[in-house]
Length: 227
Image 1 (tube, rainbow, N blue to C red):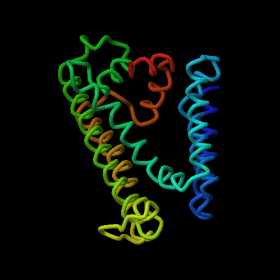
Image 2 (cartoon, helix red, strand yellow):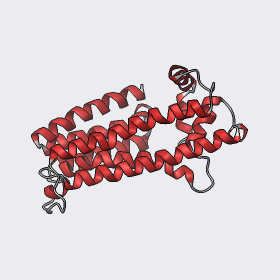
Image 3 (spheres, rainbow, N blue to C red):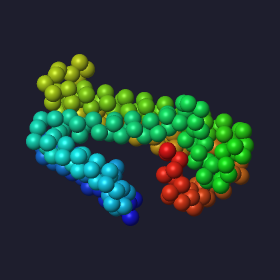
């Protein structure tokens, strides 16, 4: 149920965000920001956890205040880069302090083996993939941040009354966003899987077999690897 609520809130947020950008509406921007509270706190809200409800209400209150100010649109424009940075942190933080890298934890769940029992070459490869995703997502977060800041008209700097040092038209920014962010994510996902198939032949029968193994892991265990 929490996943369905997150998906519904995320889709609604995307639709409202696009309308906010087209209409240049701070009120719609505030609504889109408020919907993100459901995306982040969905599970806690459904479980009636007080901390989740307090966090969601505080988030919505801030979004309400922003909706009546000139800062709603700049904050909304920065959300994609913030999201990429947060996902980057999920990978990067497991590479420090002697922790098990995130992808190593994922492989452990999929294979149903303790991390210590995974073959050394599998652990090494999974550690490299963790570094790959941390670096890629961090770079994409910086690129998206730069695009949001310097786009003219409608960029963050311009909305805050600051002249863009490198003005970039919305058309060029959209093209860079597509080819510089979405395409690398797709290419990296497909390319890494193909390399993995060649490096470890027979480990998965194919993409569908891999998807089935992912689906067999309980959701609670997936949540546990991020702690």
